[in-house]
Length: 629
Ligand code: BES
Ligand code: ZN
Image (cartoon, rainbow, N blue to C red; front, side, top):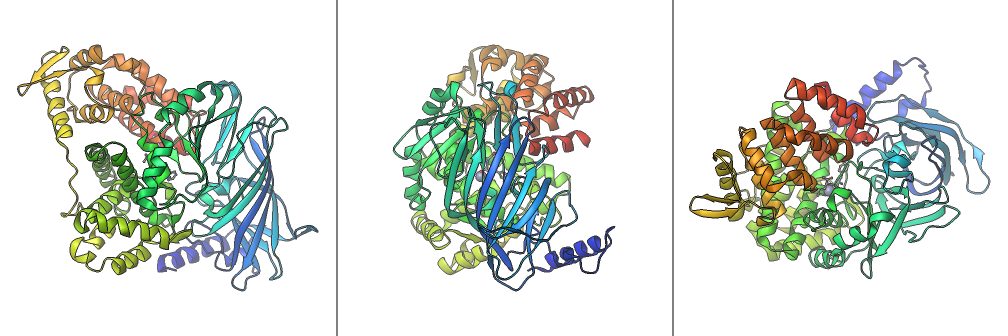
């Protein structure tokens, strides 16, 4: 345990011993916070859970029991679980003959939640916690019937990073992997699915059983309930979606089998059985979430032209980086996401070509540069290195493009220096050697130094991982097409007027949607100088008709440009977009941009008030912070 953890633990002890109900024998005195968790997994560890839950849509509550099968590693009288916004009804011991046991509820922390400290005996094998969630449980995204396509209510959970504790009392720390079983009861007309073995048809009673017999970290426990249909897309793959658009979804995602084949080539066998995807409602705060066997996907990925399916490549890649080999703490998050972006790009390279994956690199590098500047200005340097320092902070703060892009670029750089053949062999061996285990930054460094003897001579690993500047030896991802887009953007911006045939630098362009692919358009819009006049945007809008282009990546870039230029005709569509789409990656820059002018800030506040019951809690807290500043 590092010194800072100890100090934080002591501080917590001091705080708690000053609390109102001070008592010499308080169990709370045994609490130490390690890796954003109160759990004492090094003493008593939960290794398997059985859930028995009912989902109550009327009151937005899940209630029931979680049965923990525990393992005693070190002498301790307590078994400590993480909870947040849960009501604990009773705690019992035993499997068939249950008897009540004493427990204590510790002090609450706004980020970590509340420890549940249960008295246990060395002989105890099963501890059962009866509980219910509250409508404020942060993991739970409830949608009323008016907010879905099918006009039926909908529920999805989001566990990563430390939200599983808000719907199940668990030892909510990624270093502890568990298996689970679940019985979930939902209204008879709805289907329930988990990141586990899943049904493909509804059952009239609304009773569903699940099993996950491969060990996973608790942030990957996931549930979704709704009026959902299933469509097979290959021998081992399929899609779930709200019934009305299941056809559209399954054709957009028809490349799943191909993607698995490519991913397996690079990473080794896919070990999780089936790979299915569920497309969630628009409020889902992420592009995707890699719940095992069942990726959760944002509906904005379904554009009709497969142009955004790299998100699927990303979530699929997590089947190795993250789900099989997991970050040990949230400060090692770059090992989950950096590897995953690297693999995502390799999969996309296999589906298209090197130029395409380099285009993705250019786009993401741009996002990294923007965020690097933003967090630099906010003096949040602790977020700018790969290994972060998140003591006392919400791990969610660490979800910047740094672990994703800086992480991926480190792997691209290593690949370039040692050669692809050698690096590919390393990748396969790494996933093999660490499968079903966790990895810290330090254990990763030890490992790579052992496997690739001269690595420090080739790549400045410490600078990459602990530093914040851009290392000089970095992989350069520029592509000619993207450089051309940058030049074209400036030329368009400087033009007096625009028509479909546009000539610059002796080259003729047709300013039409299908002249460029989505990534090229994205880069072009981003590269438009922020001083572009509303007149030029009006010309461009006339040619492209942005209002009818339903691609959230393009829309976001267009809106950002329109806000900068104060191009008002884009504003109605912007309002509609913000009232519908809940993906944080889009909401965050748009709300930030709107706060720059007082009249827009006012509008942003109004839109947020109207939309926040649709957004998921993680998006709500991000935007509240933006609007407060
Ligand atoms: N695992 C993440 C989502 C996540 C990270 C949720 C941290 C909560 C805390 C997921 O795999 C992800 O990275 N999603 C990206 C997709 C993109 C990089 C293709 C997103 O949502 O933007
Ligand atoms: Zn990811």
